[in-house]
Length: 274
Image 1 (cartoon, rainbow, N blue to C red):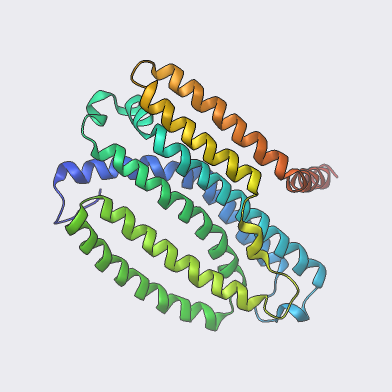
Image 2: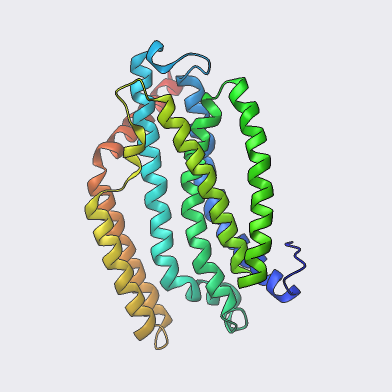
């Protein structure tokens, strides 16, 4: 339960509902990716040895994996952001009925929360790499930095909540996630400075995927404004078709990554059988 002296109990309860629903993506999609990536990087990279002095095959593979994982979570997060703007009302209506969506606040919170989700997704991968490859001294410094981040987060959340209400909590969380992502980016850039790899470039989705996603977002918004009031089922059906189209173009642009993942999965299964 969120407890804040500047929010009413009604606002706090609405925030908690939206936050818990929004956390489902983090819990079931992004957290397993973060945990698996952390374990993978601990096996591939030595903490106390410069990358240029390690096995270059492993370094090359790990750099590619960082980029590919970053692209996957960024793409998923952007899909949630785009469709979240047009389907938050429908989602909350199906979850809690008319009573939940009659005030505009829950829908507004859900739309803003979708932006926090994409930042949370990217932060999971970047921090997973950072935690897996930091030496003890760097970990100690990071713990102190996290204390500073936490204090700043509390101050910003208080100021934002006083000025713009419950949305301020989400914006403060976005600020906190952004600061942690920037720290991780700086660490990764320094880590790969003396190598030929730049895994951060791989985080950016392809142009075709982004173009189709933007177009789908526009069409979904039109559907919400024109069709949703007349037919919830038709609005959801349009969203399903648009989502399938976006997923198709993403797969089309990432056939290499999908094939690589499938080959590794088959190799793992064959090793277990042996």
